[in-house]
Amino acid sequence: MQDLESWRRDYSLTEEKRRMRSHPRVMKGRPLSESERGHLTLANTENSGLRTIISWIESLPPGGRSNKHGHQNEAIFYILEGKGYDIHDGERFDWEAGDICIVPPGCVHQHFNASTTEWARALVINPKPLYVSINLMEQKQVELITH
Image 1: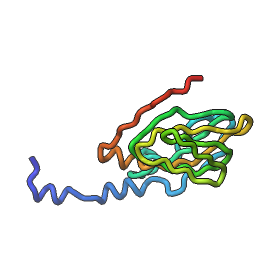
Image 2: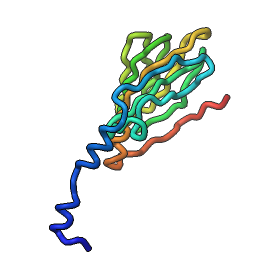
Image 3: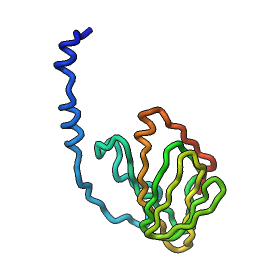
Image 4: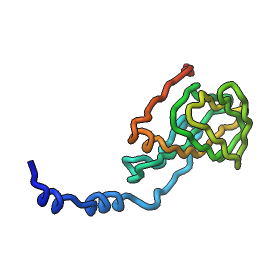
């Protein structure tokens, strides 16, 4: 077992700061193809050094919908393109490009693309890594979509 003096000498956040700061500060994007569906992860704990939030592009094809699910963490959806709606605990909330949709913690929800011809896309920002770090990881699919 290490003695206290040795531990104090060896313990430093210098290496952790160096590692965290070594991640890119700007992550170059790319256009999404029409064949991409679901999630395109933008920033997560592995590729960005972020410890408290993750982000991704959620894409719903024409007439598409997500699985019905719920989780303990909240989520923010900035609608990039398209029109659609969410169902939160049975209540409908319409959205369109430029809107922000907030999913509160513990809410059973599902996302729907209202268009039968255009894709809907949203930038999702989510504090799930923070919730995981404090052991609030409960997440459940309520209804799965099968294609």
